[in-house]
Amino acid sequence: MNAEQRVEEIYREILKRAPEHDVQPSLSRVAAVCELLGDPQRAFRTIHLTGTNGKTSTARMIEGLASAMGLRTGRFTSPHLHTVRERIAIDGVPISPEGFVAAWEDVEPYIAMVDARSQAEGGPRLSFFEVFTVMAFAAFADAPVDVAVIEVGMGGRWDATNVVEGDIAVLTPVSHDHQRWLGSTLREIAGEKVGIIKPGSVVVSAEQREEVSGIVAVAAATAGARLLEEGRDFGVARRDMAVGGQVLTLRTPAATYTEIPLSLHGEHQAHNALLALVAAEVFFGGGALPGDVVEEAFVRTRSPGRLEVVRTSPTILVDAGHNPAGMVAVREAIEEAFAFDRLVGVVACMADKDAESMLAELEPLLDEVVITRMQSSRAMDTSELFEIAQDVFDPDRAHLAPSLADAIDRAAGLAETGGGPAGTTGVLVIGSVVLAAEARAMLGRTDA
Image (cartoon, rainbow, N blue to C red; front, side):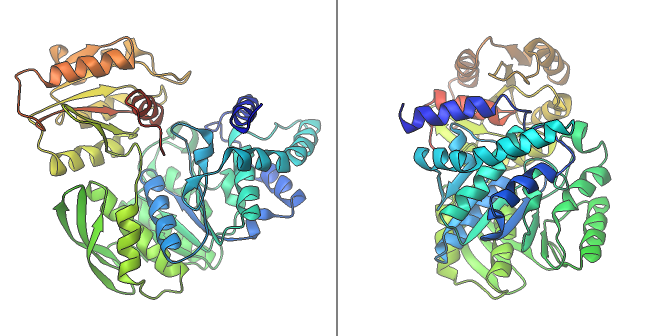
């Protein structure tokens, strides 16, 4: 059995555990395994990220800045697109198959011990996400990395990653998502997310809605943390469109950076870049970073599955957006960066999502929509989603396809109805990370 086969075997075994969306309100199991391992999460400095949208793109930009400054980096993000190894990245690339196997073999005996102890006391085994969190800590300590950029799986307070002692807590915009687990109101959701703020840390927060910003401010004050807020302490001063992305002027507490190229589309990505830059400034002592370092990091930043062009004629865009706020960001970015005369959507989503609101945000953007299925036991039934789509769109603008391949073919045909010139017709595949991964793989993109 080669290393890749062993990775798949380990992954299948871990999948038998409680799923990553099944939040278990305790850090005791992860803390116990880490203690047995000698607390690997303390072997490196940490930048900890939470929020509703933008975490992975922001994490990749922070990682890029730290790498351009000469540090060895670790990045822990979720979910993955094509291989579970993407969740644990070292120096910007997914952990090797051999490294993944070694990390599992390092932690497995201690996980078994804590599992047995927890079950003897009537508790659960470590969950899928808890196991991967521990593996990431072990891999980063073994590398060793200088800094780990750690994205929460869900929420913050009870997230498995919250055993880290983050120097910096980054909060991307907080909006409605995962209400079943985090609460139905923004105040409840924000209350969970600010749980990552540690005593004496620095909080770097995106511009938030009023009810969220108040909770962030109280949490920071209670922890004795320094709070830096977008709009008050830093901001995007200017954005100009450019081929393949945009050019930014960013105002931070330390400096104003001008003519900074970013190879990602959308105003939301400009704000993600701003958060990343401020977090990096804080990490490196609070002063301005060299301009060439910032340019290098942002030019090289990629965020697969985030408004990504995966084919032309017609243009096919893939985006992992999976909640209403994500749809708004994508809609605004497409309207700004692309000149489509006709755009047709391909949509599938998870059963726990607010599908009606997601489709309502897409409706002004899309000429037609094709509902399809994706490979997930958590996926919303296609007939149910199609019924919602018919209500949101005119019935003759909503279509149903039995598979993703059929859906993309149908959408491409619908987009090209009328024979518009090249570059003016497009297909947008959106609704879930799982759907984005399937579409990328189908169209020959398996890098991440």
